[in-house]
Length: 169
Image 1 (cartoon, rainbow, N blue to C red):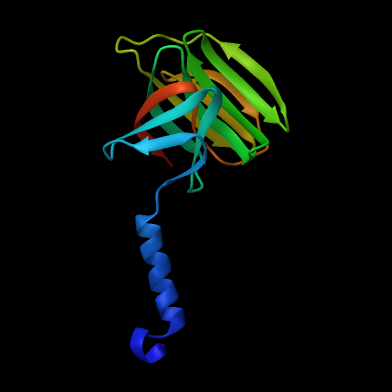
Image 2 (spheres, rainbow, N blue to C red):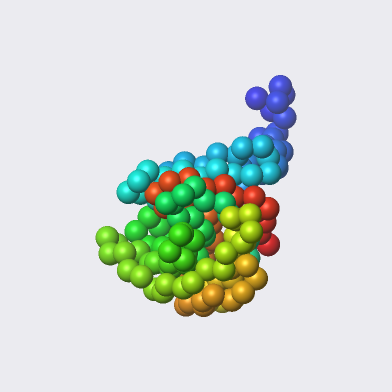
């Protein structure tokens, strides 16, 4: 093996580096997300379900411009431990809804008014500091919560949404 391919330790390191360079930056938790053109993502969820995609890298800030289909809701995962323990914020025609799932119980943490935009899209930003996540919509602080998980991501509820200008740090 070593004579034809090289030393296993060296090959493993090179393989790990290569995988990191081609690895998708988001991890699908449930539902469907599709990279449309290298610059935008389409998330889709069934009428009574969610679609979640986590940022693989550790990050303290996630932002995106979101355009939703009518009657759908979309936004961000604010924390994620597993499929039974997470919090998320969504924009819809009704405004901004922040919810938390604990086991099989889904509870509302807050409901807020959303500023409308001329083109129908809205910019959402989630910023972590220690165990607190602050949510900004159109550069305006909307809410701040203590959370248990340490992962951020994108979320779609019942329908489809397009995410552009997605970035994290």
